[in-house]
Length: 424
Image (tube, rainbow, N blue to C red; front, side, top):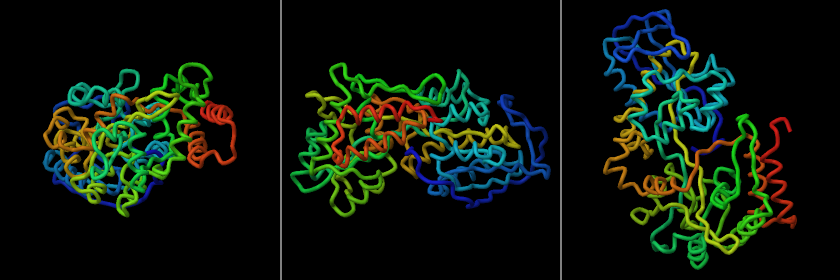
């Protein structure tokens, strides 16, 4: 979901116990689990102990899922399952900080997979073919490294789009950013977007013909957003963004700003994701609208705004003391039944093919918007130097370039920051 949200919160605990059990053995990464019946493992006292990291806001839903897991495997083992609060955005950092003491099972964003695999921290999915067949192909690809499936697809909604209040906008207005800003200005209201985040900033560059991506080393980036050639140059994008920043209908604010503004009536549109659908519906009710991102004006053209698209996955710690049971639990937490429950309780869009094909999902404006936007998105694969460089650039442009730096110089600084080595 969103990058760099919160540090890990420890510890909130939920203990769930199931009768009967015995176990032995302790597989290492890469060893397979039997498809019919898991070879029981234990922690030395006859109890299978598993720790699960998750966002604290999802604990109630996870409680139901783990309870059903207990019922599913009644009689096969005695479980002690503990939930601990952890930001999904920080999973990789927290796992790699101390992999031996990290949770057995944890959600993660798909862009964290390669780093965890490189560190040997993810236990490969034992029933890979079954999981692949059950989920959207793009979600499976996002969880795969060198043809090995390393995590269980869980959601297919980790992207962003445009929310709007139907009291102010018609279908035509929301097709272009110019139209949205004109309506907001006319009504003394705001449309919001977070320009301090490279996640959202990519929107202006992705469909312009300019190039950006991570290098084969998996650490550094290549980028030509400062290009002086082609139909759309780097300075054209900078100027287009300056024009937006100077529009009275625009407000650069963090992702939470669209909800805060909707509550006080100052915001009538904003770029965000499915996590804000419930809060915005409380503000706008049946007037809640959601569509793919609009086009924006750059170099005299209308260009479709791009996006990063992503997937939430469930991973298993390769150093778990009970890797086979941890894999069974991760599989259960991401099956059709529980992806449906996750949508019903938390509004998260399923990656499971059958769950995603339900009437309820079809009736969610946010889910349909993120699906529509996915056509114009790409998987987020970036090196760490991207984020700070984009934050500095985005905040400078949002402030109206107060030091009057030449736009080409701004773009050169941006690209130098994005492409610098980690040690640089």
